[in-house]
Length: 540
Image 1 (cartoon, rainbow, N blue to C red):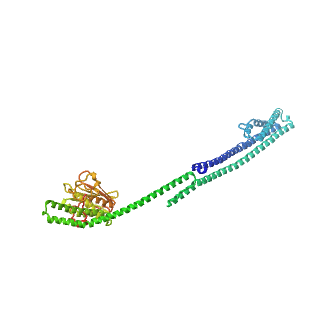
Image 2: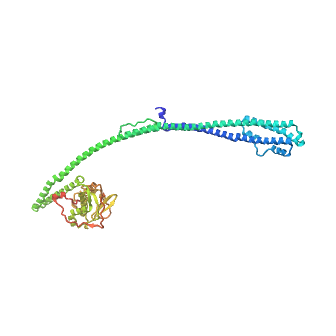
Image 3: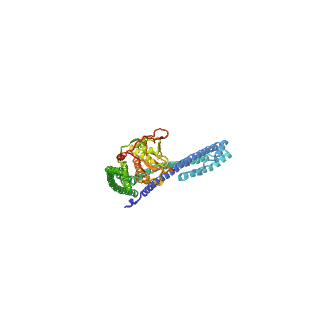
């Protein structure tokens, strides 16, 4: 890689800015120098030369007045003329002196020489005029000869001639200074134009540098990136330019390669997941087939076993010994429990697999139907079930009836010494309806809060409380099928509270107070083969 490619973008821009800045600074310095010199020349022209001409004119006019006053006195001898002469010959306070003119005309040698000649001629004229005035004072105008008067006039004429030459030299100096000012003005104009041109050139150079080193490489990188973003992930990102841009392009290329590798890994994972999903679907089909066999093919032989065992119990009870009667009782009980377990397993497998379709479900009607199915157990236990006005939710009515039936049935089954008291409540929490079923039964220890929702998990022996251990697992599956959650509320004190949440449906209807529902009409739960189609309360 050559030196130009190795130079960083910052180094290139720094060098470009330095060169353009020096050029601009040089142009400004030249323009500033010319402007200062022009201002100095203008000050000299207007402040020194012009004022020198004006002040010298004023002095020469006074000299003319002095010459007139002297000539009048020499010819007439009048005292007034003498007073005027004596007044004019005295130095005037504040008047410009020859030294002042020398300072203003410093550097103008010819004008200074002419000024010195004027001064010498003027002083000589005054020196020759003084004795003539004294002679007139002593003897009157007749004391002077015409030749003396003419000589005095000639001397002053010489002063006037020398002064005219001095003025010509000053005017030549003025014209020269004016020409120099005009020249400097043109130079200043050119310098300002050069400064502006330098600024424009510097701007163009800077723009060209930025375009070559920044804009074009960034545009190329953006084009490469858009190509990759459009879906051409195999397109290699490559950009030429300063090392900074090249390194950025290399980083983008590394990111592209990493993305391609991640997508390939994701594709492999997706294919693996699809295989696993297919295996899971095949396994589910096998399980569905097994559930079908368990619910249909096993029902008939199981019913035969149960029926013949019951016939043996009725017909031969007391004819065999006591142990044989006990064996027959065990067989009948086992057949009944097996039939109940099959029905519960069938109900558990149907949740989420066999659907009646979702609709708006009135939970008050659900509670009433569940109580009708539990009417015998409720009446025998003396249970009292009360409920707040419940909302309308979106779900499957059959499953929600099963949910309430299981929870209320558990509350009745696991009652304590007092008659069961069951309370159904609801509240609006986080865009969900949160339901609660509270009873005054034997309660559940908090450490079993998760275990009770596992299928076939029991906290009591079958001899204490009947059931298959599927009821709460079925409740959990029903709630999760409705995109909700269920849990045991670990509130202190006796009794149990189960809470679950369902998505919000229709608003709760207005109804003050709680209405006891324990007096629902009696409905005998179906037995035997008809139990499969019934929604009964199963145990924890």
